[in-house]
Amino acid sequence: MDRRTELVEASEPAVPDQAVTASSSREKRTVLVTGAGGFVGGHVARKLAAAGYRVRGLVRRKPRVDPEDPSVDWIFGDLCDPEVRTRAVEGAWGVAHCGGWVNLASDPDGEARAVNVEATRGLLAACAAAGVERFVYTSTLHTLAAGSAECPADEETPWNLERVRSPYLESKREAERDVLAGQGGRLSTLVLCPGMVIGPRDARPTSTKVLFEMAKTPVAFLPAGGIPVIDAHVLALAHQRALESLESGRRFALVGPYMSYREQAELVAELTGRPRWCVPIADGWERPLSGIAGCVDRLVRGRGVTLSAAAVAGGFLRLHVKGDRADAAFGLRHPPPIQSIYQALADFQRTGRAPWLKFRKGVESQALDLGAADVVAR
Picture 1 (cartoon, one colour):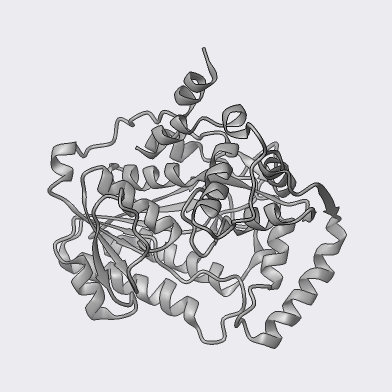
Picture 2 (cartoon, one colour):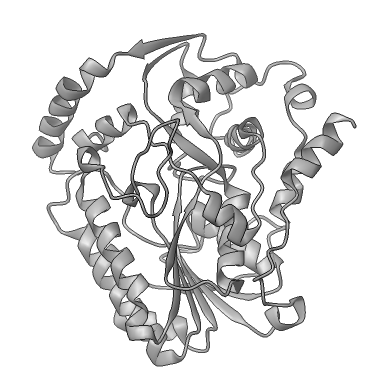
């Protein structure tokens, strides 16, 4: 078996028994994707459209669209506007709610609650009134718990992440409770909690920013924390399968392998030659660095600087979580992380955001097989 065949077989997602939507019926169903202009929402919208759904993307402004992208009907507006929500869900069969306020800093203006809680409640009510059948909410892995390498946490492990508490995290936890309540049983709902999402087309960038920074520097100072990663294409497939599933009222951790930040840096270096040196930051530095970050955050009142105590603490957190429930329910297979990292970095290079980025000679043929990644994307 050659390398290409091996990677294709490892990445080919199996169709779960509970997937109930046939291709012929997908074409008649409209799915609203909130946050469809963002990294996660964009992947979800394109995946659903490619699968045959009529996709309606709610965005503030039209995102960059590649010529080969499947068709998406764009609705422009603010998720916090009740009229926009009502118009967006009209005639929809399902909703993938990927939009939200994401920031680990302080929130003096209450944006986290306004967007992540109040707007989500309004969207749930609008869905119930419009007769929407399925509602899938994209949350965060930090609403779950941290286990250990020997005993990873799962969806039922009591929450223990007080050290990374923030307005963002608290608002996501509250929104999850509202979603799972399902408007008193009038909606069939699921909550998906992804790990660190890695892949192409992270325009801001968001979760791939750490990889971007690693590729820029010859010396990386890294805390000993880590987090499970998930390929962006697998994440999008999970949203499709969740919408099609018979599951309801449950949470799912969407995670591939756990990776420390040092392991991530080593894969980036394998691809690009940088960072050349990884310098560990001892755990004893977590408290003083968090204190300094908290002071900076309070000084700027969460504006213009993403540094915060929660962000620093997250770098030291070993977030061991297993995703067996989602893998079994949605038939997920995870490609090697180096594939996802390569696609993320290659996209930075292709779009001109990192013209300085160079890949090591022969790395594509030695470490990657993009055909296998394409299987995941379909």
